Length: 465
Image (cartoon, rainbow, N blue to C red; front, side, top):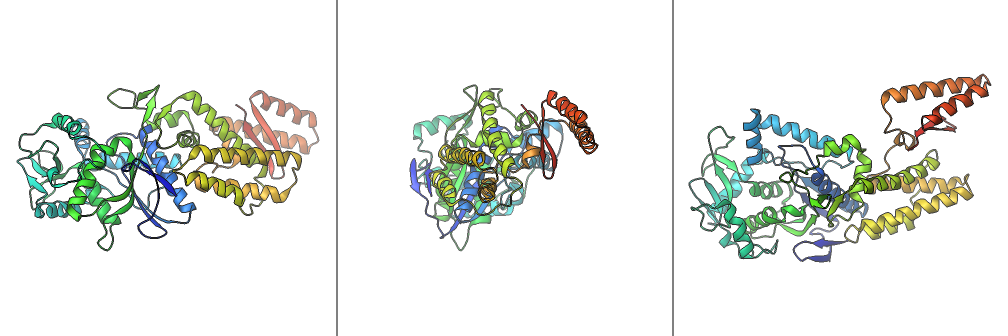
């Protein structure tokens, strides 16, 4: 396996800390609002990474957190008068449901910042003890001057960082690069008791503490891969790395991976620009599997430009896979083709080269159709092809549906009932040898863009686009 390490800025061989095991931490959402396409892009990218490691035989521990205490959440509380728990539990459930629609598997561990407060306090206490943190009138700050490697992760210059720091100028800070580990309590805001003062954690400290709690072992604080969106590289990941380095004298992660931005009409997606495409809006128009395949089909490090025309082309590609699945669906799957499996894993082992992997998939689909056209009764070939498609389900998270129901996704429940009733009437007409009536019903359904397939297990149908 070769991956692109954001720190070294190049592709490097992946060598796990512990043989055949990999620990991955991905920064999850701050749960104060609905998920957007950027959240979906990151979730799908690292869901694929996890699936590839599993396919390669690794034992994977995959952690993705929820930031459920933060300035944005507190502002939401003030806006709508709801409690922190009401807001965060609502958006966590919404996020998880939408991820399931996208076939993103749950993480092995899904910690919340509010469930990690004791560990956060202990972490800060240790930093105060090592004199790498200090108190001001409004909180506890990390002293960036104590970290000789500060900015080595993001490769920013001191001048760039200083410009960023001036946005939140605070006179009491030793250096404007220093950042809050703990914010002392304000009226009507959530707070927790701590030996250094009642308050709440800063954003960056939460992830470091959750990683230490759930992934550290036997004095080793380093994990294999820390991942997230490119927008988190600075300041979030830079600050995570710095505080863990100074607290434990170890690097937080051996490798850092970041997915590219999402743009809409060539413009970076952001709420401030008013073009933040909520996932719920996309899922109201497109099926979760089509949207997953669309987001998956662009290399994770590349910036992704959302365009409806491209999405429709992706759907046609997925349709081809399902049409092949329909041809072999009633066969009993055997063993996956070793050459097909090898070509897919070779591509994805090269920093998740999805373009090359999907080219191999397209080749398999085309070849299988050619073979079935020439010999439609070849049971052995059907069994292998069916096995290939099932293996793709696990590897890419696509092709999971019954191929007949896949082509019925866009049909409403009322329409389905009408179609099923007409099919039943056609079946009765055929039993009564009233073939004229049966043909009349078929023609009626075809006018409604419904195509019928008489199979050994009964009449199947699909909506023809």
